[in-house]
Image 1: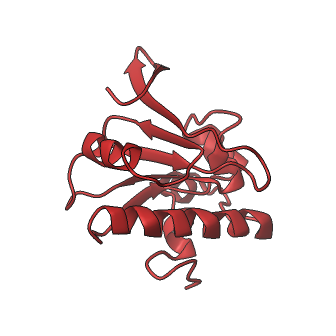
Image 2: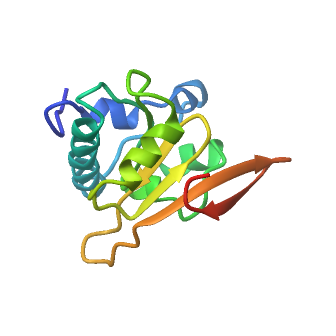
Image 3: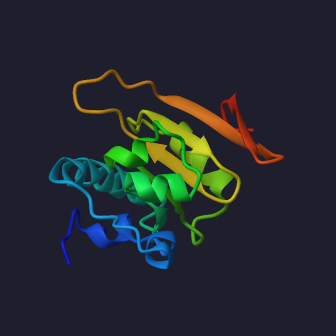
Length: 150
């Protein structure tokens, strides 16, 4: 198994039940693996912030086929290996995780409270970081966002 950081391996970022069920290749490019290494380092910092509690990644890299199959945004940072969706049950609820990250000095591009999970993403190397914090609202098959964590 390829380790990206002390606590995160490549397999955690590429696992996809959707890819397995539908026979979709979810192998990242070398550029995406470089980005996933950056995300793994960010998640190491998140893990430390959360008291060194284990983090469970539910979605990391998504090939275009996987992204389409799960209804991901066409410009999702998951396509570039620049995002991860995760939980940390031993720390607390996703909202608590978002509030903890929000109050920290961690540098990220986007943090989204998604209800039952947390989305965190980075900007591509060399691009300005937004430090954008959002809450997702799911209704009738659509998603809207509000600023901050609510």
